[in-house]
Length: 207
Image (cartoon, rainbow, N blue to C red; front, side, top):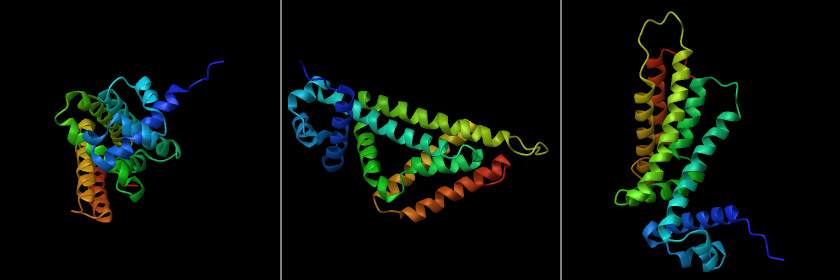
Protein backbone atom coordinates (compact mmCIF):
# COMPACT_ATOMS: atom_id res chain seq x y z
CA UNK A 1 0.00 0.00 0.00
CA UNK A 2 1.56 3.36 -1.02
CA UNK A 3 2.54 5.64 1.86
CA UNK A 4 0.34 8.71 2.26
CA UNK A 5 2.31 11.95 2.12
CA UNK A 6 0.95 15.21 3.52
CA UNK A 7 2.41 17.47 0.84
CA UNK A 8 1.09 20.69 2.34
CA UNK A 9 2.72 19.93 5.68
CA UNK A 10 5.94 18.99 3.85
CA UNK A 11 5.88 22.25 1.90
CA UNK A 12 5.56 24.23 5.14
CA UNK A 13 8.42 22.22 6.66
CA UNK A 14 10.55 22.99 3.62
CA UNK A 15 9.57 26.69 3.84
CA UNK A 16 10.78 26.79 7.44
CA UNK A 17 14.10 25.31 6.32
CA UNK A 18 14.34 27.93 3.56
CA UNK A 19 13.76 30.67 6.13
CA UNK A 20 16.47 29.34 8.45
CA UNK A 21 18.98 29.16 5.60
CA UNK A 22 17.96 32.58 4.25
CA UNK A 23 18.58 34.02 7.72
CA UNK A 24 22.10 32.53 7.69
CA UNK A 25 23.14 33.08 4.07
CA UNK A 26 20.53 35.30 2.40
CA UNK A 27 18.03 34.04 -0.22
CA UNK A 28 20.74 33.77 -2.89
CA UNK A 29 22.71 31.41 -0.67
CA UNK A 30 19.85 28.92 -0.39
CA UNK A 31 20.14 25.73 -2.44
CA UNK A 32 17.58 22.96 -2.80
CA UNK A 33 20.15 20.42 -1.61
CA UNK A 34 20.85 22.42 1.59
CA UNK A 35 17.12 22.89 2.16
CA UNK A 36 16.59 19.13 1.90
CA UNK A 37 19.30 18.52 4.49
CA UNK A 38 17.92 21.18 6.87
CA UNK A 39 14.33 19.92 6.48
CA UNK A 40 15.55 16.31 6.89
CA UNK A 41 13.93 15.13 3.67
CA UNK A 42 15.41 13.86 0.43
CA UNK A 43 16.35 16.18 -2.43
CA UNK A 44 13.75 14.34 -4.50
CA UNK A 45 11.08 15.20 -1.90
CA UNK A 46 11.95 18.89 -2.23
CA UNK A 47 11.86 18.67 -6.03
CA UNK A 48 8.46 16.98 -5.95
CA UNK A 49 7.10 19.93 -3.94
CA UNK A 50 8.90 22.67 -5.89
CA UNK A 51 10.08 22.46 -9.49
CA UNK A 52 12.65 25.25 -9.12
CA UNK A 53 14.53 27.18 -6.46
CA UNK A 54 12.57 30.32 -7.38
CA UNK A 55 9.25 28.53 -6.82
CA UNK A 56 10.53 27.36 -3.43
CA UNK A 57 11.59 30.89 -2.44
CA UNK A 58 8.23 32.33 -3.53
CA UNK A 59 6.41 29.85 -1.31
CA UNK A 60 8.71 30.72 1.61
CA UNK A 61 7.98 34.44 1.18
CA UNK A 62 4.25 33.73 1.23
CA UNK A 63 4.76 31.53 4.28
CA UNK A 64 6.46 34.31 6.27
CA UNK A 65 3.91 36.93 5.21
CA UNK A 66 0.98 34.69 6.15
CA UNK A 67 2.60 33.90 9.49
CA UNK A 68 2.89 37.59 10.39
CA UNK A 69 -0.63 38.41 9.20
CA UNK A 70 -2.10 35.42 11.02
CA UNK A 71 -0.33 36.40 14.24
CA UNK A 72 -1.85 39.88 14.02
CA UNK A 73 -5.33 38.43 13.46
CA UNK A 74 -4.92 35.95 16.30
CA UNK A 75 -3.93 38.71 18.72
CA UNK A 76 -6.92 40.80 17.69
CA UNK A 77 -9.30 37.85 17.97
CA UNK A 78 -8.00 37.09 21.48
CA UNK A 79 -9.66 40.28 22.81
CA UNK A 80 -12.82 40.82 20.75
CA UNK A 81 -14.14 43.48 23.17
CA UNK A 82 -11.12 45.78 22.81
CA UNK A 83 -11.53 49.19 21.22
CA UNK A 84 -10.43 49.79 17.63
CA UNK A 85 -7.67 52.07 18.97
CA UNK A 86 -6.33 49.32 21.24
CA UNK A 87 -6.56 46.79 18.42
CA UNK A 88 -4.63 49.13 16.13
CA UNK A 89 -1.85 49.46 18.71
CA UNK A 90 -1.61 45.67 19.03
CA UNK A 91 -1.51 45.28 15.24
CA UNK A 92 1.27 47.87 14.89
CA UNK A 93 3.31 46.15 17.61
CA UNK A 94 3.11 42.81 15.79
CA UNK A 95 3.88 44.23 12.35
CA UNK A 96 6.98 46.09 13.57
CA UNK A 97 8.61 42.80 14.71
CA UNK A 98 10.43 44.58 17.53
CA UNK A 99 10.33 41.82 20.14
CA UNK A 100 13.39 39.61 20.58
CA UNK A 101 11.45 36.44 19.70
CA UNK A 102 10.65 37.93 16.29
CA UNK A 103 14.17 39.13 15.50
CA UNK A 104 15.02 36.16 13.24
CA UNK A 105 11.73 36.59 11.41
CA UNK A 106 12.53 40.27 10.89
CA UNK A 107 15.95 39.41 9.42
CA UNK A 108 14.37 36.90 7.05
CA UNK A 109 11.68 39.37 5.95
CA UNK A 110 14.22 42.10 5.19
CA UNK A 111 16.51 39.63 3.41
CA UNK A 112 13.64 38.74 1.08
CA UNK A 113 12.84 42.43 0.55
CA UNK A 114 16.44 43.15 -0.42
CA UNK A 115 16.37 40.32 -2.95
CA UNK A 116 12.94 41.40 -4.23
CA UNK A 117 14.39 44.78 -5.22
CA UNK A 118 16.07 42.99 -8.14
CA UNK A 119 13.56 40.16 -8.60
CA UNK A 120 10.06 41.01 -9.78
CA UNK A 121 8.70 37.47 -9.16
CA UNK A 122 9.85 37.70 -5.54
CA UNK A 123 8.45 41.23 -5.17
CA UNK A 124 4.94 40.14 -6.12
CA UNK A 125 4.15 38.01 -3.01
CA UNK A 126 5.72 40.68 -0.81
CA UNK A 127 3.35 43.27 -2.27
CA UNK A 128 0.48 40.89 -1.58
CA UNK A 129 1.53 40.56 2.07
CA UNK A 130 1.91 44.32 2.48
CA UNK A 131 -1.51 44.87 0.91
CA UNK A 132 -3.12 42.44 3.37
CA UNK A 133 -1.47 44.19 6.34
CA UNK A 134 -2.34 47.64 5.00
CA UNK A 135 -5.99 46.69 4.45
CA UNK A 136 -6.16 45.46 8.04
CA UNK A 137 -4.75 48.78 9.31
CA UNK A 138 -7.17 50.74 7.10
CA UNK A 139 -10.09 48.86 8.63
CA UNK A 140 -8.93 49.45 12.20
CA UNK A 141 -8.23 53.15 11.61
CA UNK A 142 -11.65 53.60 9.96
CA UNK A 143 -13.32 51.88 12.93
CA UNK A 144 -11.44 54.12 15.37
CA UNK A 145 -12.52 57.19 13.38
CA UNK A 146 -16.14 56.04 13.43
CA UNK A 147 -16.02 55.73 17.23
CA UNK A 148 -14.99 59.34 17.86
CA UNK A 149 -17.47 61.73 19.57
CA UNK A 150 -20.33 62.90 17.37
CA UNK A 151 -19.72 66.57 18.27
CA UNK A 152 -16.14 66.48 16.99
CA UNK A 153 -16.29 68.89 14.06
CA UNK A 154 -12.84 68.15 12.60
CA UNK A 155 -12.64 66.17 9.39
CA UNK A 156 -11.28 62.67 10.06
CA UNK A 157 -7.89 61.70 8.60
CA UNK A 158 -7.80 59.53 5.49
CA UNK A 159 -7.54 55.91 6.80
CA UNK A 160 -5.59 54.69 3.76
CA UNK A 161 -2.99 57.44 4.01
CA UNK A 162 -2.62 56.88 7.75
CA UNK A 163 -2.30 53.12 7.22
CA UNK A 164 0.44 53.63 4.62
CA UNK A 165 2.36 55.91 6.97
CA UNK A 166 2.03 53.52 9.91
CA UNK A 167 3.11 50.51 7.83
CA UNK A 168 6.12 52.40 6.46
CA UNK A 169 7.10 53.54 9.97
CA UNK A 170 6.87 50.00 11.33
CA UNK A 171 9.04 48.72 8.48
CA UNK A 172 11.64 51.44 9.02
CA UNK A 173 11.79 50.79 12.75
CA UNK A 174 12.35 47.08 12.09
CA UNK A 175 15.38 47.96 9.96
CA UNK A 176 16.78 50.43 12.49
CA UNK A 177 16.61 47.86 15.28
CA UNK A 178 18.21 45.12 13.17
CA UNK A 179 21.24 47.24 12.26
CA UNK A 180 21.60 48.61 15.79
CA UNK A 181 20.67 52.21 14.98
CA UNK A 182 17.90 52.01 17.61
CA UNK A 183 17.12 49.70 20.48
CA UNK A 184 13.82 47.87 20.50
CA UNK A 185 12.73 50.07 23.41
CA UNK A 186 13.56 53.29 21.51
CA UNK A 187 11.75 52.03 18.42
CA UNK A 188 8.74 51.14 20.53
CA UNK A 189 8.66 54.66 21.95
CA UNK A 190 8.71 56.14 18.43
CA UNK A 191 5.90 53.82 17.32
CA UNK A 192 3.73 54.64 20.32
CA UNK A 193 4.37 58.39 19.93
CA UNK A 194 3.15 58.13 16.33
CA UNK A 195 0.06 56.24 17.50
CA UNK A 196 -0.61 58.91 20.14
CA UNK A 197 -0.58 61.53 17.38
CA UNK A 198 -2.92 59.38 15.35
CA UNK A 199 -5.39 59.20 18.25
CA UNK A 200 -5.36 62.99 18.38
CA UNK A 201 -5.97 63.30 14.63
CA UNK A 202 -8.79 60.81 14.93
CA UNK A 203 -10.28 62.71 17.86
CA UNK A 204 -10.70 59.48 19.80
CA UNK A 205 -9.59 58.32 23.24
CA UNK A 206 -6.18 56.68 23.20
CA UNK A 207 -6.03 53.15 24.64
